[in-house]
Length: 134
Image (cartoon, rainbow, N blue to C red; front, side, top):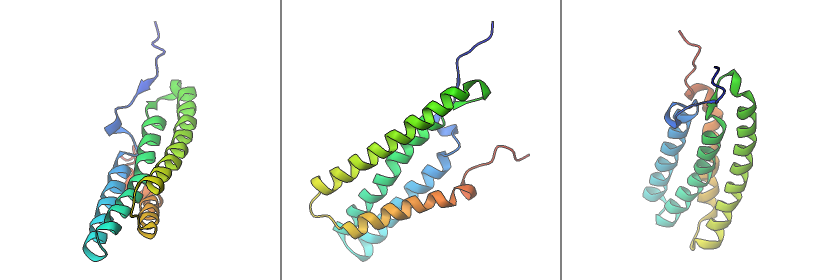
């Protein structure tokens, strides 16, 4: 009898795991830089901005890359859509919480580290391990 359950990948074996680690490292380094050279408010504002970028990306990665194999094609497409929808909702929710609930807040630091963390996605081809290498 053929097993028809989709093959699930553990989170640490997903293709985007290294990218998420680099995004988290960039967020922490940027927050430390802001703490040393600008101040405490800029540091936690920057940390919030980086986390606003990182947490939805982590959610998307968990949802989108949890299946593998040709038999799981339908589940892969469905999970990509669910992951992207959840990522957009989570991003909007986190921005709302940051602006409504955190006082004082430095918007320039928040958006700067947010964009810096998202910029790491542009470097994804360099960071994601290729499975086709010998």
